Amino acid sequence: MKRSILLLSGLLAVCFACTKDHFFNVIEPDQTSYVIPGETFFPEGIAYDAKQGFFYTGSLTNGDILKVDVRTGTNVLFAPGSAQDRMTCNGMKLDAKGRLWVCGGTQNKIHVLNPDGSLLKSWDLTTFSATGFINDCILDENYVYFTDSWNKQVYRTSVASDIPGEIDQWLTFTDAQIPYASTGVNANGIEMTDDGQYLILIISPVGKLYRIGISDKSIAEIQLSTPVTAGDGLWLEQHTLYVSRNALNQIFPVALSSDYLQGTVGPGFGDGLLFNTTLAKAGSYFLAVNGQLNRRSGPTPPVLPFTVSRVPIP
Image (cartoon, rainbow, N blue to C red; front, side, top):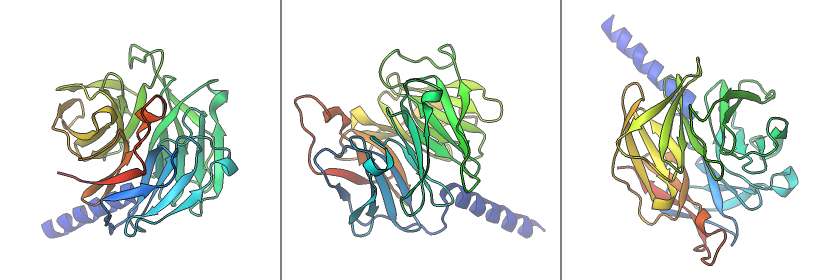
């Protein structure tokens, strides 16, 4: 009986991992760096299909999305921004159906693409807020959640059906719960705990993390040993949260308590990163986007070519 219970527990753990990552066998990246063509591409978001060995990244300047082979480094245009009324592209995630969910940034839109790159559906969120900054997203087998860096809210829609429904203004909060600055980027990266009970989001300028209960919408600040300022993309692995800190050009691990209310920030890692934005896990590596968003305007041009780096996870 004990052996049967252990076997069942192991199978359940494998099934949960499959639900979260949508694959059993991970293809690891062969290249240390991946060239993103274009002198003004400025990549930001990333999503990795570890079963097929491709990652997707999108442009902040024209909304184009590339598909890149992690074995050869070759890339193709997966979805043109101009043809899909997408002027900019931020965070993105793949769901279990192979559809790509795309945050429309300051265009205040959300897009979902079919596995062939065609547009399945898009939402214009000006019906909720005249302006908005849809920055990042996270999903499970039921819902996908979106941060808005300008408005104190989290959006949600279903991923379970073949044709997604309407966008729900799932959570609104106050400055007393999660303080927002009047200008600039506020809520940025977002993650979900492995048990599906909580969302974790980061407020970039002040480096604070917040835990949001999915069932009751409770909000609590995660008490950190030190702020993770300039935090951008997030990746949660059990109770270790990895924070991509763009202005510091490194990735920092945060060891979280069992209730996700305390966090100890560890030393940064990642060599040669350039204003790294979002992350995707590829086996024992991260794929880190060198967005160089600090060089979009001003006297200092970006370092060309744009790249996505393979970063060993300590």
